[in-house]
Image 1 (cartoon, rainbow, N blue to C red):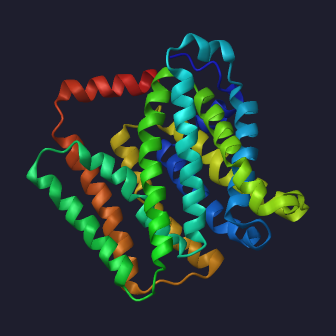
Image 2: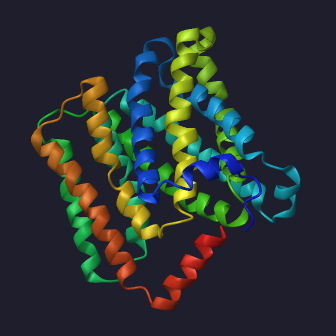
Image 3: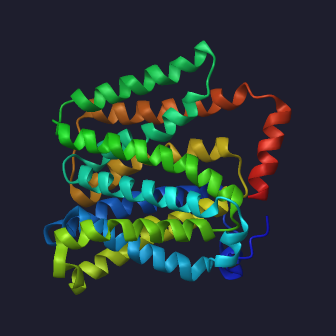
Length: 308
């Protein structure tokens, strides 16, 4: 598919960067933004952070990718896919940031990652595929009862974020096949911002206009949305989904590390083991899930990813 909506300058810059580095950069950006944003929670709360992050990111992405109405009108079901992706993205962001307000970032990132992990495991039909599931379950048990008490409300919100994120991955995959470049992504983020507007304004009010709040929100929007989403899009054009899944399994560890360095959130050693167990389960599920695929199907999937 022609990537006419992508700016040549951006593609030229990241084209010389190895794809694994792009993915790791996206992982660090997302978790850094999540750790950086709580400093304005007292002024605007999680709803205000989500609203400003999505609004700024949506505007920037639309300026970068320049979505065309004619393109969406010519693709059947494109608008429905974009709307669905945006709704799931808004739900994920609201639940994720509310969860960070209750429990450490490393715990939120670990539970959230169970969403895409469940998707990877859902298509399995072999007994050996239960091993990663057991490893992930053990990791969650270690995380929940490993020393530092975790608020049940925060755990529930993180579970909602995991569900929304898993749904977003499914819908966005369909969106990527139908729309070139990041046009669908830009509109989905902007739609998510519009959905979060009433919630954000009701809870934050005029504090949203505070220069300090706007500055922090802009940093979070660029670091945690614009750059990661764009870097991941470019990386997926050059590496198989299997490799991408392995690299993104580092998100729980990155969340725990940034939570410690920026927020001072400490976890007990059994909880660090739980985070490691979930990451290893993801790596195992990724390799097991692709190992049993027929060669022809693997090649077809690779061709499809190159076209999208």
